[in-house]
Length: 624
Ligand code: ATP
Image (cartoon, rainbow, N blue to C red; front, top):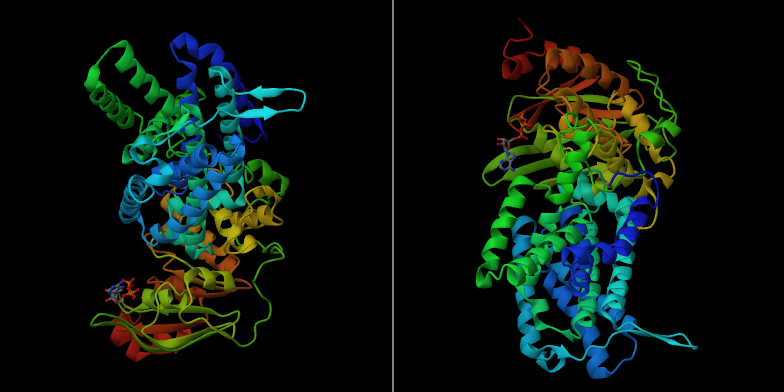
């Protein structure tokens, strides 16, 4: 799926769809089964964008499948609308609108609660179809008499009414669907989906509006479901009420798991296996009611032994044959990011890393400033209470532009909580935060990052299934495109200055040696540098580093301190760390926290010599 050549996958798909009718009948596939497969495959493309790419497991896709199908069938049967294609598209639009409204509700929750809401919503739709709306939907009888399409060309009329012409019609829609989906997942808009799947917290922290991207994915999935639902009515000549059932949603999830989530083609492959086996068990082996049991066992075996589905398994075999098996630790990101690659990077003329490099000119959009006058951050009276616990109490804290500030304090002194309040990850119980002269108290982490304030985390928060370069690209995209943009048809590499920004950050954090390695394959020290790199790629005007040296070996610490020295030039940075020796070497001023309060502030020399600090915190370590 990680092809750099445009349209190769699209062309292969078209060839596959054309060749299938000449091959699959020899394996006992009927034209109707093949039509059903492509309709399920089309239904699954949207679901895969939602689940495989964005990580949102929905069991409610039947609601949109049924809605699209019923609206189209209603127009074609009861209203008597003559144009099949237009009716199907109207059904798709209706499903998208419903998807938008349902998404606003369902996306208020995450994880299992989101999945449960989608189940409940699908059940509500099933009930509504059978009862209050049965006059329009036919209730348990469905809507019979859905016509097949005809295309009047003036001199003749094309009737799509034979088995093979119907297959061609559905295959055409599948091709359109896959071309659009490939375009979406390769666009800057689409690559954010993978980041949200891997780490929604960090995706928001680097400046992406996670909720809006999830909602967009939800609407896209509803649109594909609505389109497939409309085509189902045409395929069967009848819109069945079963489209709304939980079984439909469940079958879609199973087929996607069998084929491979996050591949776009997984649902098609899964539908092929599922429908073929169900036909085979029922019609050839005459298993009667036990066919579902056997199919269930086959499903469990497939998912256990091929946890990335059939496409993932084939991909692994291919990698093994190509000798890439050992290097590959985690699955690579599917389809996305084809724009930002080694190839694109080479065009950006990377410069070999040198220790403490002179920083290359930052991209035009960089917020790094040379105007080092006055405070950039001013916090007053900051207090944070967790129930009865006072994590921070009445903190007054000012940082000037260009300053390199250290924060120290014993465990539990409230350092991380202070950072969380400054980056608006948690709201203060009371107090005020001014950043660049603007009151940011009560804003959210995404908006504050967009303003130029971000942090690296004490515990790595990376996009673990993506590569190093892709991680940095995600962060840089937020700075280049803003927190949300529907640029679905744009190419990542077309974004002005993006490649340079990513390459520059790779150099800054000394990760030019393995830019295309999956993050999960990196040693801890490199992961830690990438953690800092993610914050740097946002081009912040104020960078907060929460224990950048945490958990590092002595050698890795020396490298990281060198790196911090090199990135500190021309930036305003606040660093928390317990390694006082390294911190005092780095910073100009130090703030000491104790029991949630500011104990003292001063130069490293003043802090080292301060008796109160030695007694309260250092406990004689420095004196010794
Ligand atoms: P460390 O150096 O160990 O990272 P710290 O100085 O960063 O510590 P914080 O993590 O800010 O300290 O924690 C300050 C206090 O607030 C601690 O007592 C901690 O247990 C408490 N605390 C932090 N987060 C929460 C939370 N979400 N809910 C309840 N208590 C919390």
